[in-house]
Image (cartoon, rainbow over all chains, first blue to last red; front, side, top):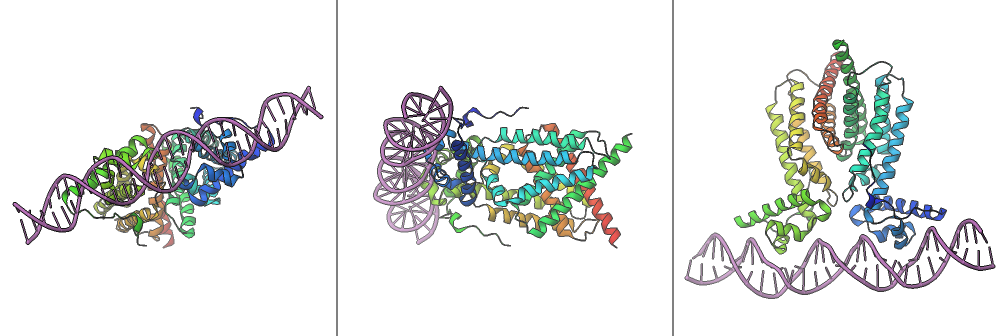
Length: 215
Length: 215
DNA sequence: TCATAATATGAATAATTGTTCAGTTTGGGG
DNA sequence: CCCCAAACTGAACAATTATTCATATTATGA
């Protein structure tokens, strides 16, 4: 499954000089800031340009329309998140499965809570955007990374690794997201994180047990 | 924590005659339909009124502004979902904890997948709306129900029931949501559901084991 | 240095759309 | 049956805002 950027969301022009790259970065940064500060409904092209210190016309040379702003922001965000996950996965090769899960939970949770306002703002920004391609690409990247990791566990060989991987990833990512929606106290979040690890560990042991019985 | 409906979102007038109630229902139904069909960005007050077979003016007698439409839709949806969960919880009193978790997963998953298009549309509709109050109310209702249920389990008494409850609820609800974002095949979803139950069971057994050791 | 392509400007445009309100219709109680 | 409040109508208004384009500025490389 290859994720393709919808043609309507591609930039009109690719920057060729240094100043143009600076403009592009400024616009994306301004978009994030305004998204965080005022939310999507208040986000207007004029305001973004203003905050970026750029004229609207310039913006429209690189972004065909407003949605492309949101798309670009999410694209960057997800790319960085995927990189972090890939790095964690590679660093965990050959470890026992339980440590892998722990590393995965820590990395993902940390990435999401580092800038909770940004996380929240992006969660809410997805309305106007056709984000399926973006999420699909993110999913394939991370699935590849986590699957490779789990199949290299030092202490377990899973019968149906695709299933185990899907379960762990969906549960972990989903739990983090849901924890954002229910505004838990810091203390509750900390407990939740620990318990999630306990839960995943229990699941892994169960998988191994079932595996043994099947042999 | 008592959830209060933001005053700006309350209807201007409460319907007093039968036809007014019909109007209200028609508007809410029309909002859902358009949300599903075209998504939030295309949702205009005129279109909603048109589809509801009502004039815009009438709509504005019951909804102070557009956001109130979304609010009302989500309010109804969450109220019904909470009712279903409460019913399931009450029906499970005195059962073993594992069956409780199974019932909870089944109820929630079924409720969300019954009308996947509606679920998806509402997930995406939350932009303009201050949905914190709504979600908080939903959370307190369901937390009360599930906590009461789990404390009535026939086979387990949890040391920290608030924690166990928080974990299970957040994991289950979060997993369902995440499963919607990653467009899994029906087969994968079915497997995921089963494995989620396995995971929760493993967690419960772990809780009980830890409990025993503490005594 | 100069020509040219890249980049930047921002007032003007065009279209959309949320909201109002003066007037009409409907229904129920007396 | 009749009256008054409740419910309904929809053209008109006001405001916002995404997008364009004719023009100006800046960088590059020959």
